[in-house]
Amino acid sequence: MAVSVQSVIDIEASVSEIMEVLADVESLVDWSAAHRAVDIREADDDGWPLVVWEKISQFGVSDEMVVQYEWYDGEVSWSLVESGTQKIQNARYTLTDNGDGTTHVVFDLEVELKIKLPGMVVKKAQKSIADTATTGLRDEVLRRQD
Image (cartoon, rainbow, N blue to C red):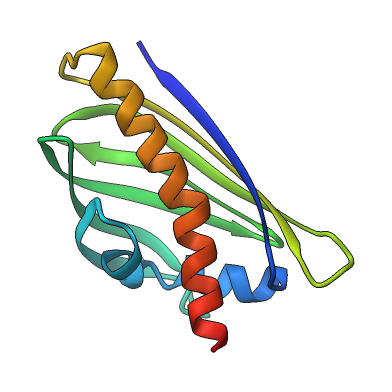
């Protein structure tokens, strides 16, 4: 059964500053505790990552996966191409300019695992992922502004 999580935050940065951090997928190893390695396998002519291999480890579960990215104005999404432990992974960041120098960020994630985990572990993983996807992103964006 797939589980979903949504996390929302306002970040003191422009949409383009946040998109720049999101496009720097290789930096995930620096600001996402779950990411151990990231490799861009395919990028478009402007350098935006399209196919990315990731090695992750969280709550005792390690995985190597390939995801396919789609980039739009103020939005990025990705979906799972292959994985050892996941059947489904669909994620999306939607960024909206608040008009006051801040950006409203909504992160949505849907995951279905091939393996069975206790409900408590799944809940902890959801909270950790949501925190990293919003607070971790905010911290990285603000760090780059300094």
